[in-house]
Length: 535
Image 1 (cartoon, rainbow, N blue to C red):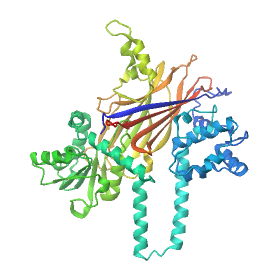
Image 2: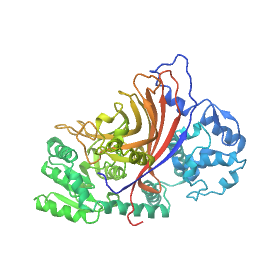
Image 3: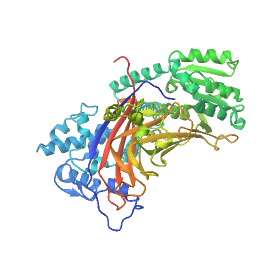
Image 4: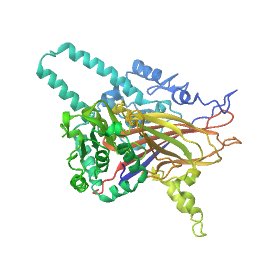
């Protein structure tokens, strides 16, 4: 599922790294890259000219010698990864002007406004700043686990857990925290506005026609639901984000006993009910007009389902944040051991050329050279969604990230993962290309497992591929000869805190050469968001 009403943006941060000569290194020496990126031998402290062997040690020095505990401070304010990067550059910027920002920082309260809330602070102040390459998402997970344990211990020690009022209070706070994600009132209002725009976009039938005409997508779901009788026959099925109800009808035709389709898009649920009736399936299918998060009871036996199905995927797999709703439905309504379709999702990455961006079209237009148009397009370094021809790729893909929908946590949607790509042909690498596949694996689909693949080597789908243009092209070749023999990097994806259906993508990449040295490391930031037509 994806909408054509999107905004794409990009922010580039160039972080030069001095080329490192390494005696005895070879082109196959790939495994040290991640440690090099995160653990440089010289990490500059934030509040002094001292250098430390690691980010952790630099932060310890700042806390013990200069009275500023950076980790506690960002945790207190609930800073996202991008706010953390801005804060680092803000502090370094003030220090470079011989100003001490601590007095200003002490007055900042959670929820902002933040003095570093400006994308100008995404541009590094210091070259090769290891703190900007540190994986702050790992810090969040560790801090969250430690804090939860400490708070839980304190609560249990002081409360009478036999008191029903206390039990209900704790339960309600847990539910509130789980749904709100720590947003304040203004954040919730904005979240509601974004949701309204999102669901409104699915009230237009051209989007549903585009998805239904995508035979790769639709036929894969049809086969999964109609050709797996051991899973579907007699089952209770929940279809999250049902749209026109096509998946619900596939499940009913496949032998499901009870099917519930849930959709919050205004206008579409009435049509879905009519379509179920028109096809003689309304005796098995119930359509509910609501966000699944707001549904407390399903019109099925036992208020539980045996199978949960949803077509939740967006551009670059995770755009739209619909997966969050699927996981909510899983935890609320799927019986223990129940099936979720699809159950596995894999995200892939490969090196792309100018052709992958579609720019070679402008080289010869009816015998005319129009390359200035291509140059203008490239000057806007933003996320692009387009069908990429497989022959324009410069490398084989590698798996960047995988999700198991049966067991994953919601926080797994925000991730940071490294890649190492080696070219299979020489050329100018001008972009990184992303795509995904989802599996209806044999774990649940015993009769007829399916794979929905959006690879450039397969039949194109409405998801196409997601292209992340590089600010500067990199000459690359399998044989060396002065060009890079590979690209090492990291892709991070996270849902934006103040606009949860916007996907922020961070890309860091470093060319690697045959003699073992590395070129400049560059960091770029992109976003894909729901477009507000009213503004």
